[in-house]
Length: 102
Image (cartoon, rainbow, N blue to C red; front, top):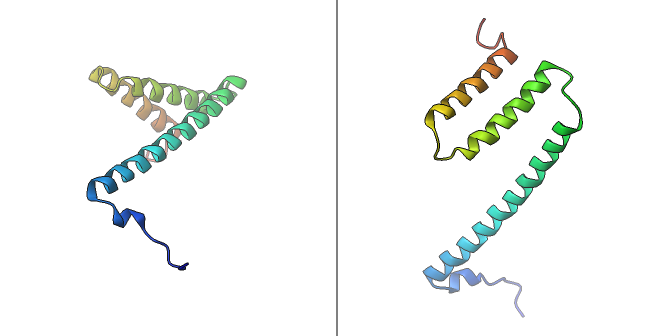
């Protein structure tokens, strides 16, 4: 028996290597998507648990909701997307009034 490991990927043809790499990437993406889904569910449970105590907390909830809605507009209305972007910018501007030299 040898102590060297054998890289089986190097012994496969190019198309088999690509297929293996594709399967690995898809598996990794699916794992990340599952983690993102769990984290989103946790965040949403926290948002639903208690009402906002400050305007900043309410704005954080609204920003999250607007971003979720914007994701559903993948190929949708460009004007709605711009409006969502403008509202998110307004939230950011009002949350950090001194950030732009005001």
